[in-house]
Amino acid sequence: MCGICGEVRFDGGSPSVSALSIMGDVLAPRGPDSSGVMVRGNVGFAHRRLRILDLSDKSEQPMVDPDLGLSLVFNGCIYNFRELRAELEDAGYRFFSNGDTEVILKAWHAWGENCVSRFSGMFAFALHERDSGRLVMARDRFGIKPLYMAQTGKAMRFASSLPALVKAGGVDTSIDVEALHNYMTFHAVVPPPRTILKGVRKLPPATSRIYGKDGRFEDRRYWDPPYRREAGDGAMTRDAWQELVLDALRTAVKRRMIADVPVGVLLSGGVDSSLIVGLLAEAGQRDLMSFSVGFEEANGEKGDEFVYSDLIARRFATDHQKIFVGSSALMEALPGTIASMSEPMVSYDNVGFYLLSKEVSKHIKVVQSGQGADEVFGGYHWYPPLVDAKDVVSDYGKVFRDRSHAVLGTQLSPAWIAEKDASGALLEEHLLRAGADTPVDQALRLDSNVMLVDDPVKRVDNMTMAWGLEARVPFLDHELVELAARIPPEEKLRDGGKGILKDVARKVVPSEVVDRKKGYFPVPQLKYIAGPYLEMIRDSLQSQQARERGLFRQDYLQRLFEKPSEHITPLRGSELWQVGLLEMWLQSQGV
Image (cartoon, rainbow, N blue to C red; front, side):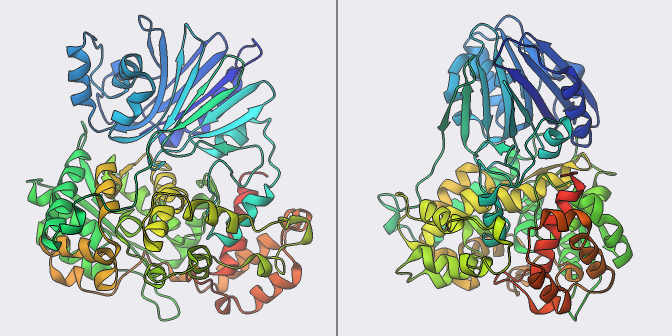
């Protein structure tokens, strides 16, 4: 829901109204329904609104409460806002609107920094205190809603997208060498605070930040669940775990139906999205709209899973829409898809979500989606090899990393090679910190807190919001994740992965959907690059801009051009698409 941006000056000057306007224009697709700007003293906020809750003008932003001396811009949805509002009203607060935005204002005044721990939802917000001059920024537990920042002289700008900051000017757009290392070796994941550009940073998830009037700030991580068994968990039976997961999932799905507009489902036909549909039907949801997308096959690899999405649609009588994307339409959509990325993201299904969201937004404003289940319930193929890991950092790197530090040195130009193995250090930092019982727990925590944030979650936000569509992800309900973190790894890894979740799913959806080979969002044309796709990437990487940038060794690129289908990463990605996507993204941003 929405796009936010702003500028705060720490030298007594006034914010640039022009910069606010430019950033707001870039964010317009995220919030096509209305806009607003507020400048007061050294602070300027701008907002683009997608009306989901309280459709009246009373919930317009930036929202100002003159009695409390607070101003706010907010992106997201607080699912428990009605319960929090009732508690605040009992404490004497009075409300002028009926949405969740004003609840954040009152909650901050009542509970201070602790308010974010009480929010159930997805959110990124900036709040200014008139009397103290402080600026407060916060991001939800999984970074579902983005928040980028750039320091420009004595000012700090922030926005819901990186391109908005770049477009406003004054940003250092040179490449961050360590971020480039992450991109090339950590499956294109660049963890916070870095981005691929030196001058743009992002607030980590589950973090609140408070800026003083002088520009100095302090961060506080407000959520970090342990991945270990609690007292009594060892006596839990499989049936008991199943009941707890099913109850938590019911609650998570129900929470995400909170809206003053209809809510649909992105139905891939896999276990996760099918389970969401089944639980909504179980709860009595009628006339539910569901949407699926499919692509042409390539190299013998099928490009859709319509047989399973059709089965679920018939079983639960959804109003189902199927979108088939031919090769020509896919090619036409790639420039828009790449331009809509806040950061370069290599997953092929970006274009799938982009095209699906374009069609879905013609019918509906809000959807639920199944992202996060694999990271939370152990669905990926790289978890089983870690069960008996003696060196989890090395063993995780073998199954997840796209290439080693040494191999990268043969592919990047010398000027762009980081002095150290930046991604190895990152893995060591996250995997070895206290709070996880086993190597699998360590990997699940890393993937849920780091990889998930800057791959699947970011992908869904960017591609849906490019068309003014809000996506909600019930598998990332924080209470569900806290529960899943306690479940023994062997219960998750059973049955080819996600064993405990499959047990639950069999209680709700047809077994044909559960007991089948794991599927992905297939876009085979981008995995087996040939024809016009190969020419598009070749043109980009051999352009004058790319040659002047000089990121990659020419002998490496030549090997990729000659036999693209032979250079596939351990996670089944195309090396040529990875390097080509980075260059195409940089060019799309005018970098």
